[in-house]
Length: 82
Image (cartoon, rainbow, N blue to C red; front, side, top):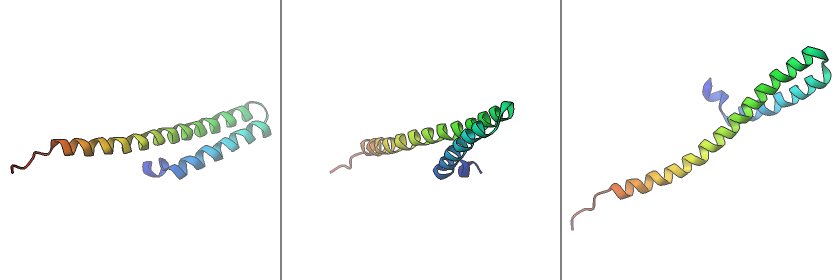
């Protein structure tokens, strides 16, 4: 379940859908009910947005680390005697 919720398409859906619902709830509902609905949906949307930013940073660091690991592996190889 965790891998499904952390996938990029699901995070984009949660971010956009909950952001729209939070905005609509704030406009359509009055009083405490509107504030509570907008705040709850807004928090879910912000959480998904932070998840998107976090996954973007992890992906870019992973490609850089892969190149570094490959260079380190090449430097650790022992030369064969001639």
